[in-house]
Length: 151
Image (cartoon, rainbow, N blue to C red; front, side, top):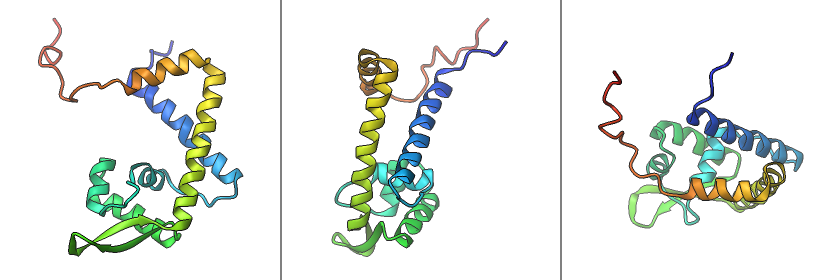
């Protein structure tokens, strides 16, 4: 018998469903494939751009990982570097016109995927799921009582 899947596994399965479905929908729309790390850049990119360091913090990844994903997207013409208005030493990463187009398409496709999920799960279940996930969970630090070994 297979043990029950824990909540982190179930959440990861849901994320995998969206990632896979989005990649397929983007390919069906004729877009070039991008990696999950590159998708993550778009998911965390503020509209007015940011530095690679700030982007890495927002993505919760190492700066080198963010740097690699960003430079691959620059090579694809979806992002560009511009001088940072706040510092002559820093560069700001922003979406190109093509990057904004691809981002808009991805957001449209994600909305369609959410609609499809609503049809599969039922609209009220999807509404409940969204409400639960939007609710603040508090700090990630474990409760000290929870860290106490069980007898």
